Image (cartoon, helix red, strand yellow):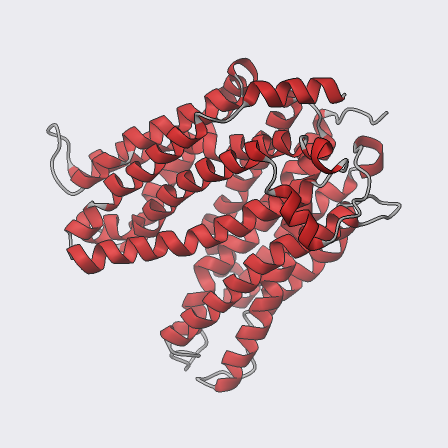
Length: 434
């Protein structure tokens, strides 16, 4: 009988999310800047912007493909340390090292060798990112067998996810002033690495009950898509993320074009949403435990569907409010359902993965998170296309204003789909299988 994970275990599990969110946020924020407007003295750029974008797109494709592949190997791994911790141990240090290597191209000028280097190292970076994150997420249902414990783990993961982002957005500025650009990158990689390795202190075999799977990749994917509650969840959650991604993609345009502020002020509005989300975590945690995951998810979807359409009026004096004040209120209100987005989905995937025992007789948590990751990455690409199409066909500022109502429509569709989620059936199966 596996032991129940204590509070310290839940906290250090969550710290892992702080590590990969910190490193990935620095990469997303600064890699483009580094290659397009290099901070190296006397160097204006290392490659054209369009070439960088093409390389990044190729890297994202590699990232998406890696999800189910890594998931299958993690589910099928048989080792004395368990199925997940070995992946964290091996990928953690390599992931941090490759992150730092991204910022050390071979030529300090525009060169084809920089493009070859970036394409190669970025592909490795995304594979290592997946090799850490997919097994890490699969640990959540293995370390917890009740909704209460799963919600707690998801909450600590969400807390450290925001901590990692905060360090990446604020701490790197301090690090740059102390150590310079490359010194700050190394410092961020080191802090991230420490956080990545904290979950490895958990003795997986003492707390997890899963045994290695035996399915090959094709059968594993096919069986996963036979799980009807998982399909319902995927459809609802992807509609949720589709709308939210449109807002994230256009946040800088709300600030610069609709409000007429410098792009640096974008962080203020992001902080409003993240700050309210952090304050809301305890309430979402309690709501999930008292009313269930389905209720919390539906409420999050509903609030987003209500809050996002008024983005159409950003830049105008609404109800006598200054445009900046109005926008801060919108972003702050969005932080409430955003807290649900950070906590509820992982706990739901953990719950629906329990049904796998009835489908294949095996536990394959990683494949469920890997499949979710694959579709969310495709989702990001498609939402980018919709966002660009709005701007292309409706121009400025209308194309930007319409992103709020369009995002709201997609999220409302997600709510209608998720109404069919059979939470009672999953609860009955889970209680009967213990």
